[in-house]
Image (cartoon, rainbow, N blue to C red; front, side):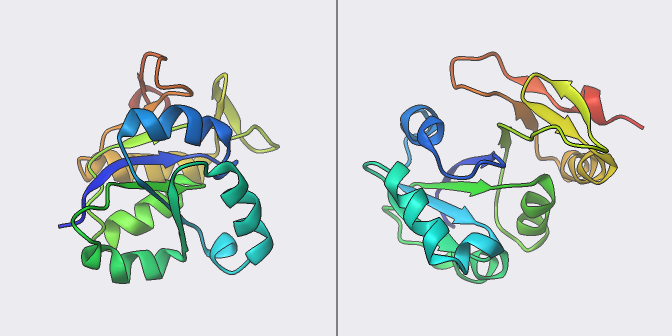
Length: 158
């Protein structure tokens, strides 16, 4: 069983707030950025690695994450980073043993409803979160580790 110590949704990807705040808070030693676009873009990987600091990094597609996560070495304490709740749901449905999800930044844009200072949701986002909750995965908004977690459930009820 892979040692997944933290899972975060953050549209911004791998950046300082992740590596300075959430990384140390999680106790991870590896950040696995599961994102199809980033996994296929060396320039985005190079930018992300500049922010990675002391952490080892991997950049996998969602499918590769599903295919190899169970082969992780025992010493790896894995922080999974995704950009959307749909990506998180894909991983969970694919058998990645995620037990809870931290929600960071999901920016406002047309068609999204701002539900928190850092989180805006459209119907697809709400649907994905409802499915994650139905699968027993708690999802909480928490920009910084020192912030009080806020359950997403209140914002995605039908």
